[in-house]
Length: 385
Image 1 (cartoon, rainbow, N blue to C red):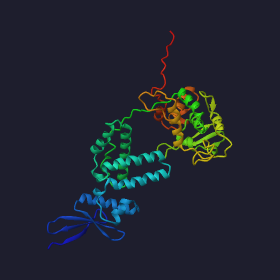
Image 2 (tube, one colour):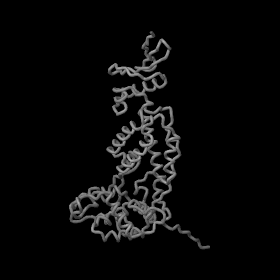
Image 3 (cartoon, helix red, strand yellow):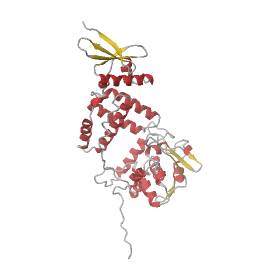
Image 4 (cartoon, rainbow, N blue to C red):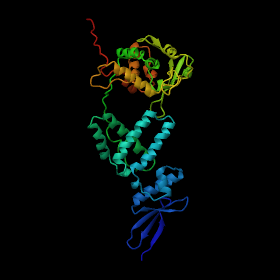
């Protein structure tokens, strides 16, 4: 009866091969340098060498995520056996860490989790290495076919991020391109209407009729500061220093959020108020750290409690809908559109650096907010001859 002999691979530490003398077939094993335990890696030399290199790197760096624990201390797992469903556990942990370090906005984090569910449903059982560009393209295209271009765009972005992470962690061959990155990005035509100054003035007047004064005050604050919904909700009186309102923005590229100092004497000509004057409007008899806050009991909320961003958005939408504006085929303007309106109206004033005010670091980002999307008239000037 033939006997298998163990022989070390001189090129890759901890990798050994056995040769079956009966048929000359090679089998590969990995010996864990920490405890001497042997793990079978199959008969494919290229795969065995790739897995051995990855295990050596993982052990030396003391990584301990879900997948590496399975490889190191449990049943032998070939890279081709690691399913996308398994890696999504790791990916969600990565997202949580980014959220804790403020490298990911809460809304973005929640949206990615939702999109990951759809991805898992379609590809979860497949090994990562078996997911092809063609399969991803077909999946993304199925959303485009039903008019969900924005969802398709988000799915492509998440696929790119997932495969970047698998490559970094050795779960996808580094010599192969990211299968999602080569897919052309989905062009999305904005469907949300822009907000005009006349519409916002009508909304402000209607909002004053509500029992909660923070409804219209938050809208005024958004207009004069040009900040995002989340940043309006978290503004504090303690953020006022040396004649400026300091805003540490809650959104932006990972690790590249902007810190903006807005002068209190910045005046918005269309409503005739400065940033400082709007903040003074927000002050009342209630002792509270938050600029936008509850002034009376409402449900579980007590006077002085901050207003949730969701509440600001919902109240704006409720007042907006009551005015029955004609938005055509586009979706109605949201609270966020006050930010675009602020940029466009400040641009018209000509005395404000709106790129700095909005916290944009590129001209392309600033240009997106400057686009009126058909909301404003383009005036053709006729020069006298």
